[in-house]
Amino acid sequence: MGVTVLLTGGAGYIGSHACKALAAAGFEPVAFDNLSRGHADAVRWGPLVKGSVGDAEAVADALTRYDILAVMHFAAKAYVGESVTSPWSYYGNNVCGIIGLLEGCKRAGVFTFVFSSSCAVYGVPPRLPITEDTLPEPVNPYGRTKLMGEQMLLDYASAGATYNADCRYVALRYFNVAGADPDGELGERHDPETHLVPLALLAANGRHPALEIFGTDYDTPDGTCVRDYIHVSDLARAHVLALQHLLDGGPSTTLNLGSGRGYSVREVVDAVARVTGRTPPVVDRPRRAGDPPMLVADPAKAREVLGFVTERSELDRMVADAAPWFAADQTDARSA
Ligand code: UDP
Image 1: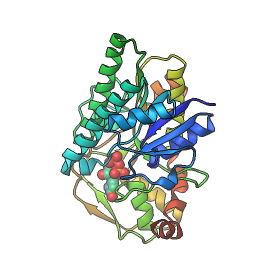
Image 2: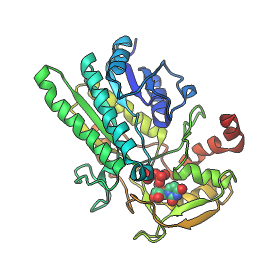
Image 3: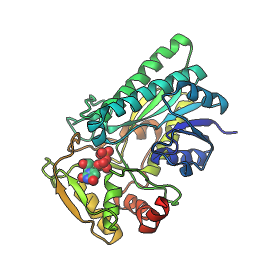
Image 4: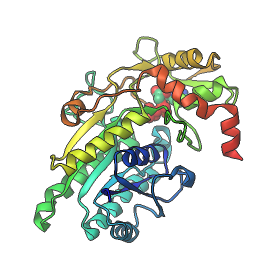
């Protein structure tokens, strides 16, 4: 029997890819998901427990029932724009959720965590690429909820000694996640879809009227926002390495997960045109609230601590892996 791991949000985009990566590495993933945004058919490498992370009793019950040794916490709302217009649901889900989760973990005696944090904690960073010691100053509610999650973990881990618990965590600050499982078993299915790569692919296919470019007057080389895109399969592999680091006795740490390369919105549109052979129609729009102009990771610390390097995160390869998932027949089959 391998080590059993609970993945909150294990039916979601990143959580399901992490289940697959864990299973491939000999772990036993158990997905814990309320299916509000996840998909039961994406849970294919272990059981699915239907429940909400804010429900400490349900969490403790699942942890005990499956003899769980560690938790990966993916379940959260993750749309920057929505967090600005609907902050209550972000504080409710992301902050109250982690309170319930940690209470459930404490009751069940599970003290090993891998936490999905975000580059949104940095806000508008003073310099690029962004290192982990940059003072976090989030500029939107989503980023603030992720920073609060990190701070809670830090406090819980510090307090662990008072109740004889070896409480340790890795907080992973994701940059922009894109792509899909290269085997075609998993992909990105958000409803509503708001992310750049999927919308550009859908626009190229004629399944989305036009990609709206949010902001063309930023102080960036072509006026559009620059982001660091990382392949979801690379990201999933980093979670396995983070877990192994903790199981080997490694200390708590906070790590960027990015490729170290930035691409503008227009460069992503160009990549979609190159890969699909179809130029997505675009329309210029005003800036989206809460968007910093440029976010690019310094990936050195994850390389040093975990030995993690990206393997599939070149832009065209990410777009090519995602493209079949947004092809017309796939989209029809999924919505049927
Ligand atoms: N973006 C855009 N049009 C869209 C969706 C996104 O111009 O329809 C831009 C967005 O403003 C940001 C970048 O693409 O600069 C990545 O946004 P996404 O929503 O994919 O991820 P986020 O950065 O919010 O996590």
